[in-house]
Length: 434
Ligand code: 4AD
Image 1 (cartoon, rainbow, N blue to C red):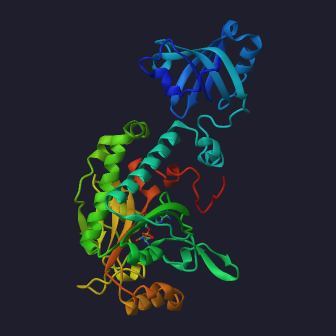
Image 2: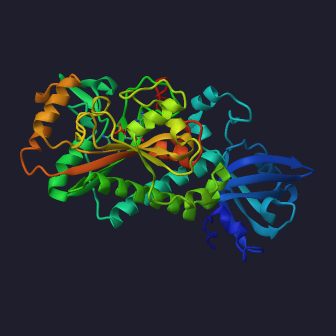
Image 3: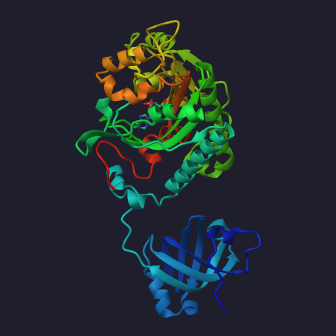
């Protein structure tokens, strides 16, 4: 007779499971033995269950082999599911046989270790319950974003990562030698998305973006997942409307599908379900006035740093659009405002509860002379952007777009102190291993 196939651990908790025989395999969360009985907590991707094994049922040698399996060692179990009020979740698996797949070396991670040590051990630390929940929520976030794009008729496209232009400022681009010419790791796919709206009108891309920012803050990574959207025929009002609908859609989806994981991480799903549109809007000028009234030493023209952004939403449960930033502190491609030449039609979406910028959005400048002027002002040679300027020569239409940093979004959605805890292998100025 062929042995029954392996079942997921969650099977043990199904209503009809008691009395059935199962085969399970997975990793050992913890183990102890007393008086000829072995207690193992076994986990797989679906949960964890207590396994008990008696020396007289397993036999001396298999019992002793199982007894020596370390935390995070791997085993397979054949046994019968029983109800037992003393076991976590009220069920246990009474083993007839336990096979050791890998007894494992002593697991180096345990309670109260330093953050640095845990980052060095990240390849193992990602097995924790908290990270498991985090990356399930991250996957659902990406799925929700893709579903929203499909529903809104936006086409997914695949821009390059290796590029010859630094679009968001040369100083923050990772530069390398591309067969004797300057090459850069992409900071944004935007310029390529702008090229792709002529054939497709509404496009998006999900790519890693790279920023050589030395800033060691709790909201900067040097590599992050970037979802960017570019929409032809879109004006500023349409842009903000798209961003807020997308944002609310993802929040509601997470509340609906990831309630347990959210709760386990410390974000009540009801708080995400409560996110509703429209989001409030505030001009940059009004933000400066408010910050000055609160005692911040800022003036019109200052960039808003972490502390300023935090102050603007720290008491709010809703995201806030800050609009119409000074042209001089924003990227070269943003559209100069029609009613004020000093500003651009751009908005940053600040996360609720003081989490700062989650989305950067703008209408794009369509006039070649203004683009060239801004490129020169930021120290770039317009000639190296000739292909981009060409887009303004052939069917140049009004358009707008934005980028959302997935880890920035999750930092807020999961209430994390540090952005690195929203990505399995964080890249920061001081770390690119493991
Ligand atoms: O505001 P940014 O720099 O805008 C752009 O790159 C535009 N070209 C996007 C577009 O319009 N297509 O970056 C967009 C978002 C930010 O709002 C933030 O969420 C995230 O990317 N981001 C970072 N996330 C993690 N670490 C960093 N160092 C980040 N820099 C930006």
